[in-house]
Length: 299
Length: 282
Image 1 (cartoon, each protein chain N blue to C red):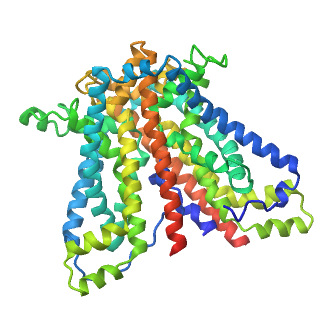
Image 2: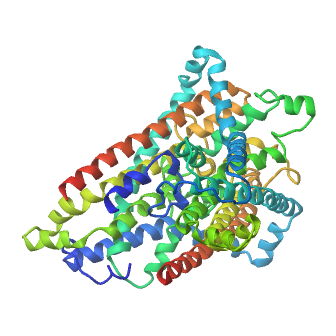
C-alpha cells in the first residue's frame, strides 16, 4: 500500500486535499444487487447528474464557450497582453519558489512528526492544518499584521514579491507535510536498519533508501502546492497589493478584467490557468507513478 | 505513530542531527504558523475586550454575520442531501462512466475560487449563456444571494461525498439486506442502518462544508454586489474594512473567524480520535 498509494492519491481531483485520508482512492463497489434503497438507482443517477451538471459542469462549460466565443484572435490577444504575461510571470515565479520551499521544509516537518518524539508533538501535528481552516482573507490580514507597515519584526514585505511568497507559503504549508506523513509512517524500517548494518552511513541511508521511497509522495505534495499557488487569490490580495508586473498574480488580473467587463479575456486567462494546473498535476502523477513502480520492482 | 516513537533509526543516529531536525521543524512551524496567529490575537485584544465587541457588533457586522449564516443554512442541507445521494450512487452501483463521475465530484478542488466566479458570471450573468433567467424572468442570480450560494456550493461540493463514500463502501450492504429481510422498508433501513453508520463521516463533511462556506472569499467577491448590510458576507466585510482603512475592525472580525477555525481543528481532532477508537474496536 505504501508504494502504490501515492500514484492513486495524486490527481487534479485532489488540489485541496483537506479531506484526503490515506487510501481514499476506493476500489470499485461490489456489483449492484437488486435491493431497494430510497430512490431507485436510475432515479438517483439522474438526480445526481442533473445536480452536478447544474453546479459544476455547466459553469465550466460556459467558461470554455466564452473563451473561444470571441475567436482565436481574441483569445490570443487576451492571454498575450502585457499585463497578462506580467501576471503569469509573477504567478509562476512565486509558485515555483514557494513549492521548492514547501518541499524542503515539508519533508523535514513530516520527518520530525513521524520519527521524532517530544512533548507537544500532538499539538504541532494539529496546528499544521490551521491554514486549511483559516479563511484566506484572514490569512491575508495575519500576514499583513506580521509583515505590513507596523511589522513587529521590522520586515516590510507589503507590496513586494516576497510578501506574496510568504502568503502562499502559509496557505500551502500543510500540503507536502500531509502528503509525506502517511507514507513515512508506513515505510518499512527494517530496510534502513539492514542498510546500516551493511555499513551504509546515515546520510547514505537517507538518500538511497528513504528519499526514493518518499519521492512519489513528495511529487504529489509538490503538485498540489503548485496548483494551489497558481489558483490562490484571497491570501495575497492585501499583502500583495496588486502592483502590475511585480505582485499582481493571475487571479487578481482575472478579477480586474471582470471589473472592466472583459469577460472573454477573463475566461481566456481562466482556461490557461486551469489547463496548466491540470497538466502539472497529471505530469507529476505520471512521474510519481513511474517512481512508485520502479520502487516496487526494486523491492 | 506510537510504534515509531523512541526507536532510533540509522538516519538519525547522531543525537545532534536529530535535535537539529526537530528544532528547525519547530522553528518553521512556529515562525510560519503560530507566531502570526498569536500576533493577530494580541493586536485584537490589546485595546480591551469591549473594543473588540464594539467592532464585531456594528450593524454592518451583524448583517454580514446573518448573511453568512443564511448562506450556510442554504448550502449545508443541499450539500448533505445531494452529497449522500451521490455517495450512495458511487459506493453502491457499478455503471459506465462511474470514474468520470468520481472525477467530476472532485473537480471543484482543482478550480480556483476566482475562476468559479468567472464561470458563474459567464453562465448566469445578464449577458451570460443563461442570461435569460435574469433578463426574462427577473430572477437575479449574479450580484445577489443566489450567486453567493451557487459559488459556495461549487467549492464545497466534494466534502460530504468524499467523507461519506468511503464509510459506505467499507460498511457493505449485509446489514441493510438483513434489515430488508426482516421486513423493514427502504426508508426505515436508511434511517436506522445506513445513516447511523455513516454519522462520523457525515459530521466531518458537515464541519468541512460549514468552515469553507463561512470562509469563502474569492468566489463570493466575484458574484456579490458587496453592499454593506445587504450582500456583504463576513469575509467581504473584512476586506471592505481593511480597504477603508479600518484595520482594527478587520482584525476584530478576523479573530472572530479564527475562533471558527480553531473550533474546526478541535472538532477534527476529536473526530479523528473517535475514528481511531472505532477502528481499534472493530
